[in-house]
Length: 156
Image 1: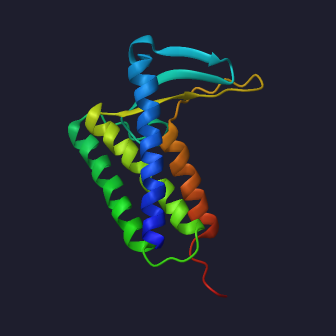
Image 2: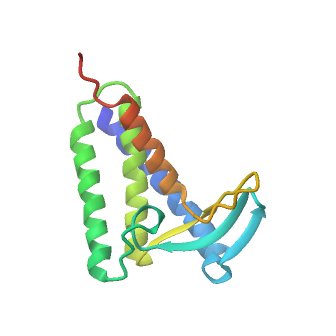
């Protein structure tokens, strides 16, 4: 049952990520337009191709770096699936599903585009945020936070 919960959440996240990327990057042609002001400065679609990991770290222009990042993501997904299969409750399967769905969304980007399509840019209060992210990134962050806060607690 935990595995079914995890896979269900992962599928929803994956589909939401794909739908948002199709709508913004493809249908709204953000890849060509580069910027679409939705509700400035709070929300702007700003095209960013991330070939590395978070915030462009380890930016890999080569196919080897691209496939290495795909392999690492798939190993993490496999490890989470093995780990979560016997977990009880709902928070751990939910959190793992968020990470898995987001990771698979970004993996598919690397196959399709050669990089992860980031486009959400949010700024506020006079602080201009130079970074863009996507739905998958939000899910990965939320899921990782859930796993950190509510993961295996060992008795003292």
